Length: 139
Figure 1 (tube, rainbow, N blue to C red):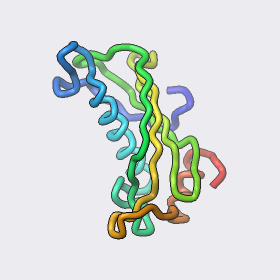
Figure 2 (tube, rainbow, N blue to C red):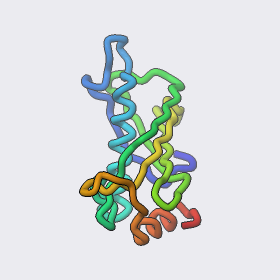
Figure 3 (cartoon, one colour):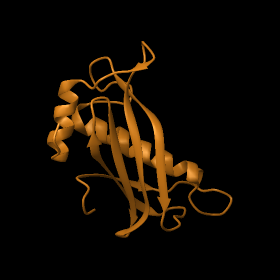
Figure 4 (cartoon, one colour):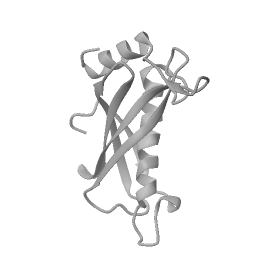
């Protein structure tokens, strides 16, 4: 998948399909989350609840652009990449393809969040460094 260093395969399941016979809107956000979890694991064993420095991530914003329907048993490839990093947040972009053609594009904004203190905080330096190195962006 061009422009994405990280991808995962996904086969559309019955639970992903709505009454219209295609993938539900809510399922697409789950697809993004599956890719995000795998990306964080790949980056260094991180998770949404632990990206280092007593910090997890919280998602305050998501955008989705639907380009084509997806159906039961479709074999998809989901790409995830980080496009922007600030002191306490980053933007993650996603693309879902079927047979090399884009079906969905989207973005989530993720904020470093201390779940113990229930407030945002700055990223752990090592996490920022790993993001920058993997994506080839300035830290």
